[in-house]
Image (tube, protein in one colour):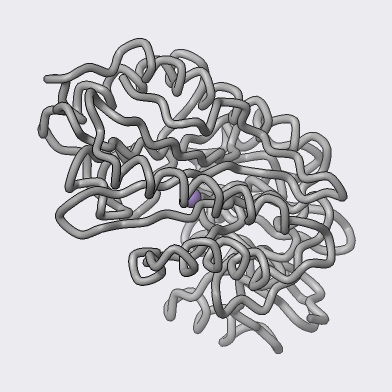
Length: 339
Ligand SMILES: [Mn+2]
């Protein structure tokens, strides 16, 4: 994009540039990186960042004024789309572009250190599915299960992602609630016959792993068992398609075809998957209209689902690393488990 300097306002991008997650502004150019930090964040910024200059916002000028002083470059690219920020940058600098593109594209392919963190995060989620098997029971509420799982995860270094579109850290949705892909956790009690969607999305050392399993409770219907098997086959078909050089659309097609052939196509109401990393949803998107192509070491999810309104929902999701042989980071079974 011809950027001479990148200016990051979003904590994810600041962290990616500098190792520091907080309220400050990151600048990256050929000479390295600089953090412009308000006084309140100076202590942490100095300790947590690596190979960066940390400078304090100048009093009276504010952070933006300090940033502008450091940026006498030709073209400056920023992740901010705030009108106030972009217009102050434009007033003082010759060429400013507001685009998240360079940041997301840099973050799309993971290095070995990032993959190791994602793998660790994924293993903890697997342990949480073991917890589900051990603790889920008829009469337990979604909220109670969420509390048990969050305590387990947080004691092992997991954090809520802060994903803005849902209020709860996890998605635990039993019976008819499961037909809402982004259901809020409620005080509904699990009862015999329920399918329970357990979508775990948690952050570990900055990085987010995302997985979903659907459990049966008590005696589940033949229809639910049949639909479970369709979703399982669809997810398997999606995983098989994941390879470097393959279009994201074709991964979505592979999943969707299995479900459409069994006449449940209109109940598959979301995309097949998305990139994961410092945010829950990053590039590439894996959906019917994606233009992206997979590359080695991208981290993505494969998560087909069937949502039958007011009845039940079933979704199976793994976070994977793209490679000649796909690395499925979750080992917890995808056979139907009934508790
Ligand atoms: Mn997901």
